Length: 362
Image (cartoon, rainbow, N blue to C red; front, side, top):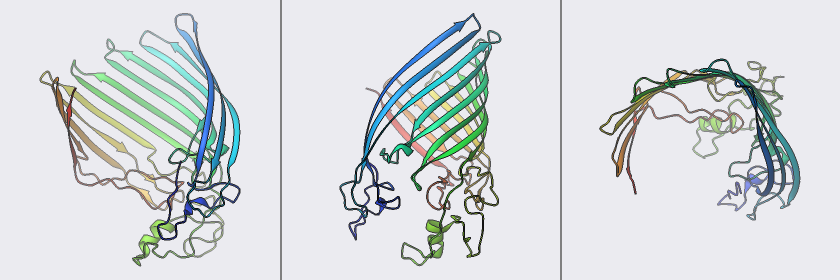
């Protein structure tokens, strides 16, 4: 069950409307889902150096969706449906040498994306996905060094909480990671990734409220703009009242590159363990600058955040101290571009954050 938030003044659940009278909308949905699946996986060895893993799965689902029992602005109605899906994947691997292997993966699947809280609204919560990936894996230095690098491309559909639709996306990227044992007690771990994701359908009708007045009642126009305005332009007028033809295809982002998260990230951590029971780990995470909204009017700066953990462990108890943001970096935690006005974003604390944990072992 998801939603069911009732206005304490009117007793009405306003999360029920907005998607037509033929069924539940928004997050005011109560659903039941039954799923039965069968699967099989086969390993084919073709000589000493080449192998293929093939997996198949068949699923059948039955579901019913209804309005919660609380009073809502939508007439209660139950919608039922069923469907079946066939998923498969092919994963070949070839050993170039004892230490180096090439691998690839191809899969076509159906993904299940429920609402927040777990409910569904219908078949739009089931989307098609496709993945193509190829890479290299290395194990060397007497198994003290592991590394992998891969190129990938995927297409998938994601459920849009605002529009009650399944929206298509595609992405291309590169990722690399490694682990190296510098000594018997010290390990270095790192990763790098670069990805570009774009939406492959138009954004649809996006609207701004007629008034940007503060809905909280404090007469602060900035609050109203942040909560309800932002850059949600529609096809007829822009944020300043003038005509614009762009609407679902923003001028500064015609390819609809998905905002809300950095495209380039890098991580590096060093961990060491002493015989005395003291453990220490320190490292950082780099995020490239990125756009916060589809219209590219808000941009988040590059950040480098350093974290550290130290712990002392015995047979009966363990004490851990975690320190976050040692450099007091001014950074943000990302956004959800398909929800709200794209002007709200969670900001991490600027000061160093510490957490002390004591664990007793039974």
